[in-house]
Length: 321
Image (cartoon, rainbow, N blue to C red):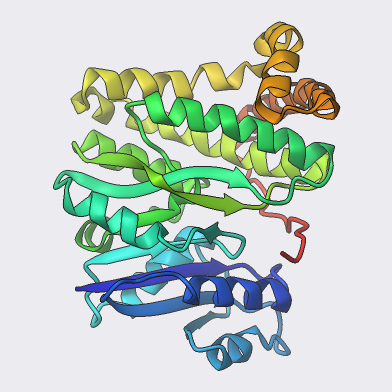
């Protein structure tokens, strides 16, 4: 059996972040699989040495001189690169992804037991909760994990997880889609495939560290969500529970200010219960700011979409873990 690991790398990522990513992903348990790890690097300039560094660290490198299709284009190019390898499973990660050592093994095990599943992944956690912004996102992730477990429409951010190779190789990603992960998830659910959440492993990643970075990220996500309405007819073929979850994701999430009273009333108790620390109650303020920021991002994304303008993919500040 063969498994490929694909990591798209934007021009904004530093050499040190790249090193940390490669070292971590190479340390994972891949059981007895034949493994090919491919980093798809969008070159920043002619002096960009990240490709050489990645090869020295023992992974295969696919260099791109353009950002065609952004992340979706990078993954599609990786699929072409892997055509002769013919992987049974394909794991997709970002450079800030820090899956637990058993992540791939547990996801593959679940995929083997679910013949109509196209992806398996785990709950996500933040590993850079160092200021109010990232602590706020950290708290948000606990809510997302709660909802993801119960939702019939399983969409894993970034398609980070392990996918069935034959499905991804055949379907590919739409490079015009701003939220290529949500677009692919919608298409797969409309065709009757399922996503599975496993709870025997975890995935850690970094949250934005500034409100500006968070706003840019979420505006892009909201813009991508508006694009998904083109699938409303195809989603009629999906099961009722899947349709319900999909519609809720594309409506209620666009009105976050409605939840501010609940945030003020309930979040202090939940934060105290979860963290067992009075100091964490301050995150309630972050959650209120977060809801207002998301509302502005949702409105601006809708206006940008109506005006047929593009959204920017900006660099996000990271910490060296």
